[in-house]
Image (cartoon, rainbow, N blue to C red; front, side):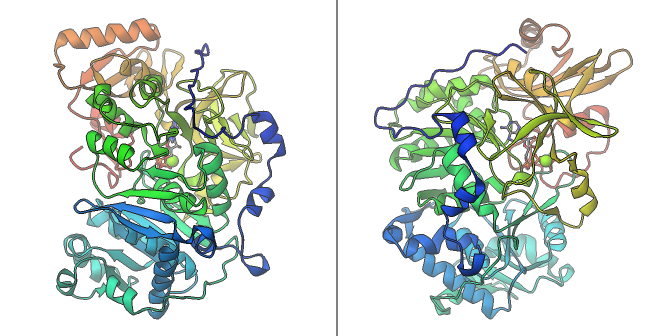
Length: 587
Ligand code: ATP
Ligand code: MG
């Protein structure tokens, strides 16, 4: 693939100089030990995420700085300073203590984006317990499966979610000892068998002695998005905080005192690593927006809260693009310094849209639940190559490899495709899949962690995403990555979203089939379909362009916003749909 030109970036006049100006030197000089030294640690070599996120700041000059600014669905914003968050999380740890929660016990939340989630997550970590966030829109089955597999001892949720989804499951969850509710007292008292978190917090001690955790103690449990199959439970330890902390500086340009907004839900890894932990360890003010996506409201938040750094997802960017860049015009986005996205490939058109609508390009970065933190990124200081995931962070060694009978071999030729691999040793690497040691072992070979994603690397060391190994299409001897085809389709003005699969074909092996949804104002006529196919052929050539194209109202996605190509394929072929526990409602 020829390397497209890099995008020149215009820096805002008052922006601080970006880090990593000399990328090679920063890589050479980086060490995880030095990164760890930015944190305080506990006496005797211990480490605790909540201590680094909260207590460290609450004792210093940041005590009265706003840590969390909560924008509720209704009513005015509510602030919690670092000092207040210290007290609330201590109270929460004390509540958990009084309920018999100790080291290694599992504390789950089933909550929307509310500050209680941060309080519970950090309170559990202070107690030495393990935190696991569940997405609040999950139905009863996925909730039960995760609580059971994760041995949930405590669940924190709301009265409404409890009544609807949890109460009917209680009898089937003998290990779930306590349910704590966040809500108005009259609603809470109506829920039998559950406790009132607010009341318990009020009565608890405002100072709890932090349980001295070791760097290797389990801290977080994250279930993957379930894009390629049954979600896996990835185990993370307290040491991960070293990576959360420093990667937020390197990949998100985060600086102490920034106003920062991560739009990811804490039901997914991004919403915890970069929605709860990293902003706090870095001493920033985090925006928590309870509401659902609405382009105008999002622009208003960026303006009114004077957001400096914004971390979002390609699916959100594409929803904003759908509304049109004119929607951004009335808003003053001059506080914004850096915008990044993760979760899916960011098509080049979306990077450029950022420049037009926000005045800043969008920096794509790559990582996964298993890596716990950003591994590959487009940096503030470096030119963006639109469509590329960027380059490995200092401290991260990435390679393109091919599996062989003997193990794996590295692919060195620029542009050649293979599996993306990482050299183990970064602190936020997952330490296991829950109840699946064999699968964990299979992820490692020849001294590499194999990510399951296909990519290539260009001559300057930028990585280009091709597709998940499971999604790659083999057609007439060509290997086609769905991302390349989807990106080309997304350049057509009528296309809002695109998902591409390989459809078995007796002659070609597979043929490329595309599913697209349209932007408002476009009709799914035969003429448009023909035009889209012709556009793709011009852009990609006949070998790679889709042979079939179907216009659909919407594409099936996971609740974390990823297109579920396996479902498009199963539906196309009339096969069983497999695990759909993370499928977005109505898709
Ligand atoms: P499952 O493992 O259950 O199938 P999942 O892999 O989607 O689900 P996550 O860990 O949430 O679960 O997502 C990580 C994956 O998302 C990556 O392995 C990659 O396939 C994709 N991804 C994340 N960021 C990017 C990016 N910047 N560009 C391309 N793909 C990305
Ligand atoms: Mg995965």
